[in-house]
Length: 303
Image (cartoon, rainbow, N blue to C red):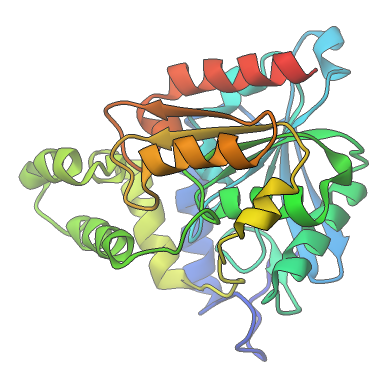
């Protein structure tokens, strides 16, 4: 698989060295092992580089013909973040988890992805390369912005969109970036303090050695380059016709949950919005069983 370090360009996501890249991949593999085993991995060539995809699937042959689920991870991460969700989601449907170019992962970016229309084109080309004409698209955080952007700019292949505490609904505030940096620096705290910090910051990464290692190695290994998650206007949201399900953490620092839980269904025809208690930015991690069930119920209602 292509995974060489792009040294010539500074406007694309790249690894700082082969050694750091390989350490990060090893850390990712330890997290992947916590979820469902992938049936296959494949690379899809697009106008912006090579997109690496993990494929999961049900043992039941009848499930393999159902509309597949496509997962798009958050910023600064890779498809390994879906480990709490792949077992349940792939039990009855095919599942594809995409490594986003520009973020750490096994995709290789060769051309900048700086505009929202480029992001939509990349994702459509990836789905086409996988032979997928109709999918349930699920995005978390920055991946939620990518999914929302797709519903606005390139909805032709979308059966539904599920947004997990997504970007793209309002401007990202300082409080979110403070939380991100605090969580990263907390990974260096003494082991005895990590459970308390994990509860205070709502960062499960601090108490899971595999996640902690993956996050730290990713920051050291990779230089992220991707388009900014610009919020969609009310007019743009009102133009979305894809069935949409919004899941928010009650203590989210990325969006104002109650505001968006009222606003999105008011603007997007037929949209459903729910707030998950006792969580912040990672409802699908903190309450995986509940959120998996909710996502599957929504997809089943669409078909």
